[in-house]
Amino acid sequence: MSPTDQQVLESFPNEPIDHDNKEHYRGRLQRRLLVNRCGDCGTWSQPPRGICPACWADAPEATEVSGRGTVYLTMLLHQGPPAPGVDYTRPHPVVVVELEEQPGLRFTAALVDAEDARIGTPVELTWIDRGGEPTPAFRPARRYTGMRLPGKTVVITGAGSGLGRESALLFAREGANVVVTDLNEKRALAVAEQIGAAGGAAVAVRADVRVAAELDAAVATAVAEFGRLDVMFANAGVPPEGFGTVAFEDFTLDAWHAVNDVVLTGVFLSCQAAVRQFKRQGDGGTIVVTGSAGGTTAYPGFFSYCAGKAGAHQLVKCLALDLGRYGIRANALAPTHGMSINFVMPPDAEVLGRSYEEVAAAATGWDPRNSPIPLKKGRPPGLIDSANVALFLASDESEYMSGMVLPAADGGTLSRVAMMFEENWEQNLPPEATTGD
Image (tube, rainbow, N blue to C red; front, top):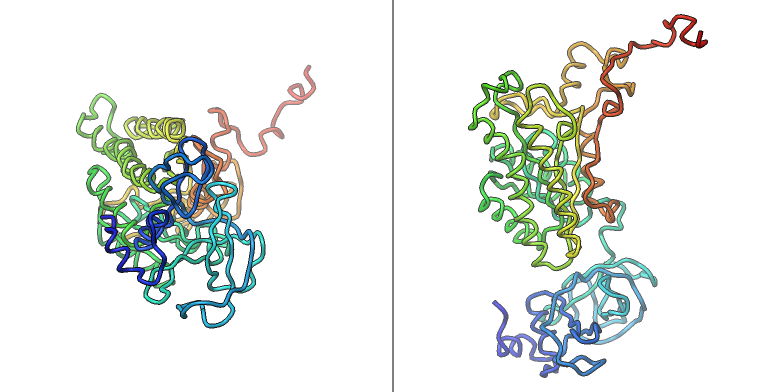
């Protein structure tokens, strides 16, 4: 609920509050940085005012901006009572920041946690308590600390095991706040605890991707715990009944729905929950979907799964087209090899954290010459190989990618024809095959 005029006046007794700047202080009380953008001339103004300073038209309702930007000007000031991170009783750094939403949209505030900011330094909004009043300030942006997801909040479905778990651990190491969701709450809690023990930030939420309300609750948890949502990683999946051994004509409709309620409808509902929050925030967002090589090629007996994954791939393309205008992008990765052995195990089985190939290699050793994968490496493919692709799609490194389905850990498999060739096949050709005789 928006603070009343009386609450604003009582909260800022030492500030010169009037009709023109009241919305600015209302936003401060909510720890939101508010601006206006004129509907007539497009001019951005800060602090928000009731009238556009450029064309004098009535300004629209104030809107929130991210507070991210770069230093435009630095100064030293001496005024005001002390606050955590800033000693206002001594000269302290103040920066004019050009906000990322629009060139020329600038905001002046104290700089905390660094005194060596230069023009062009990336910064982000923070809040300090100055004399009992919430006051905006800037600090060096965490996303430029060398990590690839610093400060970003990510919801991952199916994160209790397999690729979801591997990605949750990786994303946390790269600075993300992770909401670990899984149908198996015990697994989700274990992953969140592992992240916390390593110094990361995570919360666990039991969520069934077939239930819209539970996905909405997961997004709400992200916002309540970390302030916003940046990335939805719709990863949850299940194999078909019989794991490919049931004949097509014997596969029941219930079995069909059991797969596609998760790998297709679950993706749809996950994306819906995220998009609602992205639109509320107003500054875009990122969707990553775990597709499959089975969404573009066929796995024997996996007709329900492959159909669902193909649908998820196409949904990503539709979202890229329909949501791009809001700054929301959507991409999928399509893993081939290196996927979780837990996928074929019962839901209550121990989480092994290894791929099929890694489990086999542990038993018999890894000899790439015996692998059908064209790319020959000294180790088997693992979950991390696809998690790294998910990380790329979640990060700002792929900021201008949308609607793409990116093969992951295929090792050249998707490039080959159906005909199988032995190693060194060319050495066994008859002489006339190489001479053209």
